Length: 151
Image (tube, rainbow, N blue to C red; front, side, top):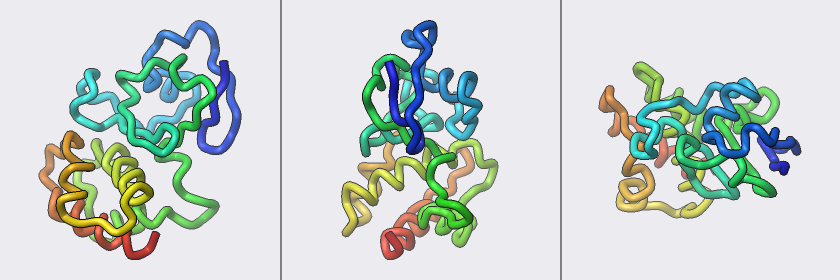
C-alpha cells in the first residue's frame, strides 16, 4: 500500500493500515499539524485534505488512503511562500490558542478549491464542525473571504 503525502509517494507500513490516519501522520511521519481533538470526527482539529476534499484524519483508517493523495498543513506552503489561506490567517490575526487552526485552514483551503466564488452560506456549510474554543469565527470568516480573492 502507498499514497501521495504532500506531493511525495510513501508506503503505508502494513502494521499501520488499521490505525487512524492521524496517528500514522503524527507518529510515523512526524507531521504534527493535524491535532487529536475529539477522536470521533466532530471537532475538526484533525482535518486534512484527501483527493481534494476535507477529511477527518482521526476517523480515517490509514489503509483507506491507499492510492490517494493526502495533503496536510505541512504541505501547503511552497518554498518560502505561505499559501494564501495561511497568509490571510496571519493578516487577520485569526489564531488565538492555535489548537484548531491547522484543521480550520485545511477546511478553508478545500472550500476555496471547490467553491472559488463563495458566499457567507458556503463558509457556514464548509466550516460547520470545525470548532474553535476561542471563538475566532468572525476572524476566520474574514480571512477566508480575503484568501478567496488571492487564490
